[in-house]
Image (cartoon, rainbow, N blue to C red; front, top):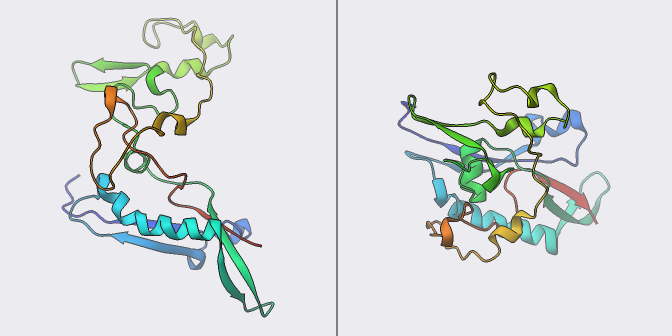
Length: 199
């Protein structure tokens, strides 16, 4: 917390390799190194925009690449498999508000939060709803928030449907209507892990 400098890196791992190789240092590519003094925050979109354009090309038409082992050319295509980031970075990348009463991206507007007056923090106590229906912890009151838990976990939803009508400008904060929890729209491209394959 006392650091006066912030450095953000964006790394790509090739998941088309065997598990014992894909996380070796020589197979991890550093595509971006964003220097401080402050974290990029919402401006990270500006840094990622050229890289996302390259990924779209790799997915749509591919790139002609030479295979030195087989001594032949092939079309290389790539796609995002998954992303790895801490919770604040997740908020910057996805556009989801990871602070306040509705900070859980799984529960969204059904997040169960309590404001603690003495320590001035928000805590999230609705985790018992993920337990099986007859679990003994659901009936316990004193050990948790003073209530029994009868709710179930929320059903799956399509996150893109929540943001499809948002209009954003890269690097700028966008005021969403009706105080939406989502602040920006991702163009169907994630940010960290790359899988390559031949065509």
